Image (cartoon, rainbow, N blue to C red):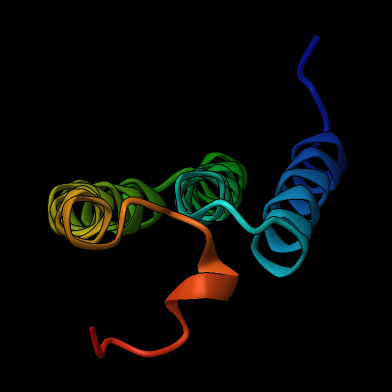
Length: 101
């Protein structure tokens, strides 16, 4: 028995909303970073659910590109967070409003 597409879409919407709340509410840059990753994974779940419903591979291709962008974002984002932490000794988003020393 197959799982209906609405279940996948509700789960993806819930994950996306949790990620958006994490971006808007949290102050720690690492938590904000993980929340963005959660939002990207929710988008991937949506792409794959519609690809399964339609029976083609276009959603898989889109999810693959989102994964590639997420990997690049993870590498660059973590490097920036480490550089900021080394210079300012904090990853609090409120204290990082400007890039001046």
